[in-house]
Image (cartoon, rainbow, N blue to C red):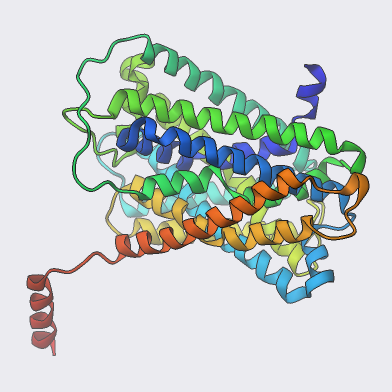
Amino acid sequence: MKNIFKSIGPAIIVAAVVLGPGSILTSSKVGATFGVLGLPVIAGATVLMIAMVALAARLGAVYERSLCDELAARLGRPVAVAIGLTLFVLVAFFQSSNNIALIGGVEPLFGDEPLGFTARCSILVVANLLIIGVLYLLRDLYRSVESMMKLLMGMMTVAFLLNFVVIFSKPRSYEPIAPTGDLDWLPLIGMIGTTFSVGGAFYQAYLIKEKGWGPSDVREAFADSVLSITLLGSITTVIMLTSWRVFYGHPNPVELATVGDVARQLEPLFGSAAKVIFCLGILAGALSSFLVNALIGGTVMSDSIGKGSHLRDRWPLHLTAIALLVGMSVAIASLAKEGSTVHLIMIAQALTVLGIPALAAALIYLGTRNELQGERRISRGIIGLAVVGFCVSCVLAAMTAVNVYGKLNPPVSAAQAASTRTNVSWDS
């Protein structure tokens, strides 16, 4: 057991970043809307994520150069830049959801009334500047992050398991009623995107090199991938089942439009303090994933343009700071519009699915090169699951594009269209 726990490292960072506040809120929404129907989705996404993380870990161990350097040498630097830019944009969207979740964790602590736009912006600016300061001041960045993520995952596991046991030890106070009408599929797509995160898996190859693992550590890297991502899927399952038990089929359904609404699922364990405790957890989760999520985009983007891929290099730090500022700007632009905080988070999470096919294709390409023979060879099982993951990502990308477009551009009735035409004519 001691050797197993020692082998856990790089993938636990990926798991902790993927299991951020947006993932918690999205899986809660899925449990409330779809109930246990979300279980096979989580199981399938977890298996695909294990395969992708294991593939990336193997590539990081057997290749001497970084992934983008390998792509540049084989396909040209523009291809590597395209991959780096894709991941950088995905990180910006994901980072915006972390910013929005930070507001969601802070706001309920000041009462039921929402904070003003100026106060929200001030909180985000101060938080991001503090994180940027930490980025440049930490000396051994990898070791500090790995230790923090192990502690974070352990705390989340204990907290959600305790709440899960308490909730299922008590009978339901109502008879569940199956939901009627059209279901909103966006939370389900968002949950797949947050569990099956090829962007996080892609970064596993870089974490393997930061850890110092090579071809002789392939077995440890595989164990790390399986254990860490299984833990990710297990916690997501517990959160979803907890929400199912509390919210699904309730005669007086909760909209789950705010963090305070979702915090009610902690009431069986913490009573009236549930809202404060849940909001503090969301706040801690947002802050803990702030830095590493931005590091993913900054490091890979720096590597793609040939400016270095190690955390001791300056360009990855500079681009990470830019990713933090871009995510903050996107979040402020989102908060400038009236709407549900949880809904904004789900849209940001679902948009991350759009860039997955390109990243999955890059991993599969590097994993099927002819020179990978003998001990360096990637197993057919991992490659096969990775190909399945690529196909799933293509389907999700198409579904997400249609769904998000419909959310952002709702249909206009004939009366509204006539009113709009009248107003335009009047203004003219």
